Length: 473
Image (cartoon, helix red, strand yellow):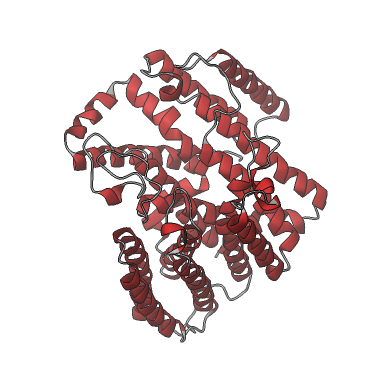
């Protein structure tokens, strides 16, 4: 069996889940509000006004950390392959920088070409601009098959680049402004920063996990001292030669990415061992694996719902109880797969408990503005979610049940932008969006509308993935 594929399936499923939940959370109708746990905890209904003093998290607040965690876990795979191929380290570093700059350009371009951003009331022409932007990105980022000549690839990318520059130069926005480096997709800008620095950190600490954790400790120290007036810490935190592209503030999210790289190292070692297959020497019965699966799901539900409801002490006690049960089950682990689950669970529990013990700091856990508790709690939950997918895919061999997530995880950037500049323009041009809007007559029907939209995005991305049309980002 191709073990790399099995690992990729579990990781891609997590990434696919994260990106599709991003799409869904952004598609939920606001006019007729749903319960507060269906939105960001700090932007509650019915006013939907940002309240930075309101503690708690919801499922919506998990999606971005899960995506960051999956990205960090993927570093050992792509970068190890380059290192083992004999590629010079300076060249790998250059490619890492190029990737970061590519993501910055991607963030600027997609924010400028979202029809509802450059037009307060998009017309048919505006929707066509969105579709054109999608086509341009396709030509710029696609991994062309070997059947297409190098000269043809260069020509297509050159034409696409001219088209991209033309759109950015000609578009105007409702306030009368034009192109601006400051107009960018903030999520992708954060990704660009942590992809660059996270990759470099992994490259130079790949054989020294203590050094990697030491760098994490230094970042924590900077984060905790950045608000001391007049300190060099505050100066360094706020310094940026290019604030539209880089801020040290963004590197807080390395608190999620760096733990992700540790998990990636463990999984990479496992899949490259000869004993990574599930064998007859398993120490755990199927019923015990099922129990572990439900305990992990319980930890996810209890932690999120408990912290949202602000029953913090009860949540901590329940988490500890569920964790002890999981640890007791994992004591019998014997096969390499089970031992991997045990090691991953120990790491996940460590990050969760670290976040829990930070919970009362900064007024309770919050996504906005992100607290120390938020980073580590969501990291722990991301590890548990990865184990859940690995149990389903690597242990029970049920990848077909999460195939849609896997396909979207393999093409995350298409999944991320397809809603705004592909699916929505098509729905609007064909007037199908009119029929979907009928569902907004009630809150839960409005949610069904968002679910349908997300499924369309997932289906479109899955189609491109099955046709092996991947974006290089």
